[in-house]
Length: 254
Image (tube, rainbow, N blue to C red; front, side, top):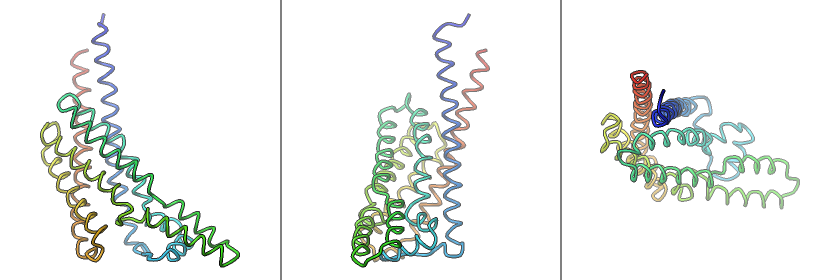
């Protein structure tokens, strides 16, 4: 008969295995979402930009999906998917380096919370609908002012959204450093995360506070994006491997 300790250990192992698989699947879906984001850019109208509030209203009325996407819709999806992945990474490191693993997860989740609080994609869609239905110039002026207030908080790569991206990228660098020290994951994964999130962090600092350099520093965003996608792929592989190891250990104890 199995002891209570053995049963508890096996149950914990099963929970970790399912969490690792969930986190790995989430990492893969993040990569697929990022690829979709890139693919949309090359579709007709996919690179459409909006400068003024009225430009955003017109874009949202003409193509609501593209307008929401340009206001961070797919970032919302990737942020949601990142939650189980981050928790899986914490669980993987909690016995080796629990303090810094928890700190990295908290920083990342705090960045997610700030992002959700500041994203204005759906409120801007609502305002665009109201603007189109407005009957008087006075109503349109009020809605336009509200839209400008929304953009000052929620337009990507501006001071309004800087804190959310800063915390998320800082959390990514932190967990990658934990990965490098603990050696549970491949060193290549850790370096890919440090480099990728490092480039993205520098890009967001410069694009938010030195907007005149935006076009010149796009190479940083491209390099950071590629490196971070490699990081997600290697995370998925590593989490799958950890789940597989637990499964094999469970069979050896049967």
